[in-house]
Length: 103
Image (cartoon, rainbow, N blue to C red):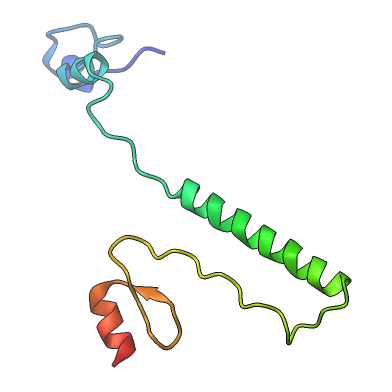
């Protein structure tokens, strides 16, 4: 699809249709100028897998005649980098939020 260049149409220097601006040509020359956004999909996927394994273990325990009372506690998920764990509830917070939560 051709790009309409309003600046070229206004000034009459170039063709109105199909003309690319200088910024667009620079972007097309260097497609990796912007770094892609970092996603947390790997950590979320691993947490999901851990939860599924724990649920299967719980079902296996109950199927073999166990009760909820004698089940081992679930494993804690690892904290995100830069987070502090609350000593009472075990949740992870950033430093400033942790001070407010703990006090």
